[in-house]
Length: 361
Image (tube, rainbow, N blue to C red; front, side, top):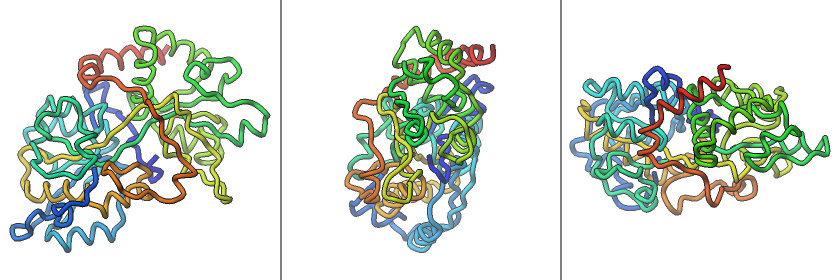
């Protein structure tokens, strides 16, 4: 939830138009290379352009430290949500819009690889990065920077006030007891929305359309993006919505603190879809050395430790310390849903087209 608001969570807007093409990213490190983000320093210099999704945010002092220690000036360019960013990268493969990109995730990564958007980074990465590599990325073009799970969240206070048990499963969302309570971002306009669609495809297989018909018959609301769902319609995100069930993240409860050491929301751990976000050097970059320095910086201890509080995501690098309160406020699923990237790549357009026809009826 990049409560800052990580849209990774935001959308895939151009996906359908692009034929429904898409992507996103993650990392960490405590080795020697991570302490020298410039990767050598002597040749460092000039401007390096980082293109990201709109939810990318790191503290200004961190960026200043990178520029001082590496010798590069970092120019950041937001490219929309994760899906829109990926589409831009794919459409501009022969004329890259920057030197390095952050924000392509595991639902869109295969499309970026197929379009040959990135070149191998050829970096020594800290433990945890390789473990989160995108399946099929044999050349190591994408470096994992952060992880998370897209999960249905519930407003626990809303249900407690009504002495009503909250839903726990995907099936529960179609139960008449929860009619009109669920809001989710759209699959064609939001990356978390697309992740939720993939969750239902993983869970119900060829019957996923039947599930969505039941979901819509139960007055599930589909909105454009994660921010619309969480901050407008959800009863806890912005505080004025009327829907106590929403598609968000497993880290979202850390955002809805109650001022007494607890949280007012809970992620439903049987409804989660694993998400990894990646960074990579753009093929044909004007400043490839600077681009590699940025990728290495993103998996450095300083950035990894800042990710939870700046973007509400989990660091990819093993051993990175989390905010102490996260131990009590958040919980991660032990067995999240997933779909093979090759299967996503082969069916993305068809699934999105079919989903769009369903929700447009």
